[in-house]
Image (cartoon, rainbow, N blue to C red):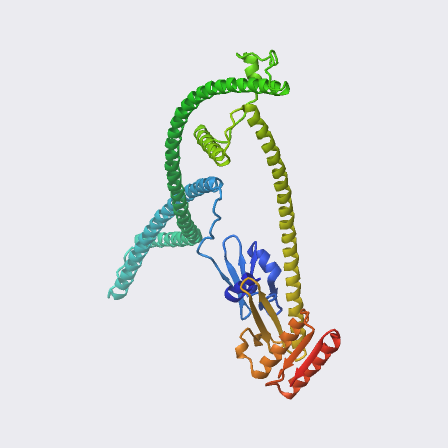
Length: 512
């Protein structure tokens, strides 16, 4: 709860929303009003969209969308192989699209070049025809001027000139027709040229975007290759370490095989010693049973055991190594000698010593049984202490909860509120007081900031709340109404009287 409140106060997470996509967020959170204005449902002010991290918000009825330039962080430990394959496929697709666009650009450039050549050729033809028309018009004007300025009009046969003029006029008409045809062709080619220019510009912009995407993909691939190289270096180092460990393992296996041979030999010797010990114990038991007289043929075991006898002997795994066992044996022997000296024992007969040993062992077993019983009692007492402590903690929590409720109930009579926080670990008691039970902004945990009357009434409420959980037969309240105004003093007296009537098994003494 504290973390959530901190995020609400610091990051305003209660005013932000997260959606899978922009369309989904607009469908669920965006309101479209009749006058064209937009608004967001609820208290939300910003709506973030996955996977790019873009967000939108509404400002004065207008929808504002902000794109996220920084890519979202990826989770640590994600397998990047699928991303690498996807990036490679995307790079291949982008490369194919780039090649196709380059072919389209080349075709458009060739078509544009042919259109320009045809345009220039038409322009040259048009310029040539225009020049011819201009020359003919000038010649015609000259002839007209000559005819007007001549004083004598000789009879000249103008048939040839008229024919030339007719031919020239026909050529002019043909040239004008060709000019109009060329103009129409130029006008008809103009939309195609404009369309080709637009396609060329669009293709160029797409190529620029594709090049940017290729640079980003190449940068990602370069990072991936670098990471692969680093991982390869780590793998090589690990391989070298593995080879070293394998070599050390071979050496250790040789040492283990040699140790196994030593262990087998030592085990054979130990079984022989155990066999001899068993034989001696049986002879000793038969001798004790016969009154201390050795019995011939009492032990059917041979002094030299067979392999089957040795295998039937149970192997006892020691808890300690040989050196430690030898040191423990030496310590025990030393303690035995010291104990013999202390008790003035000089018994050399093994039968008598064995009897003493059996009696001592019986006493030891009895003592061990007593110790086990005591340990069982200790375990039961520890479990009982833990259960008592658990119940005590539950009882303490119940007292704290009831005290908190009673404290708030007494303060509600003055239109205030509050709670008591018990810090059992640090043995502290913290009071949180709210002057107005309907306004959380009046809450404070500094008792020194309260007025004298508020402090007196809060102290009185706390004592009454704590007193409900105490088993004291007498309650003495001395000058509890100090600094209280008349209204608060009347409420305090009424509260004390009500509490006194409810606790008939208590005696209250009030000194005002």
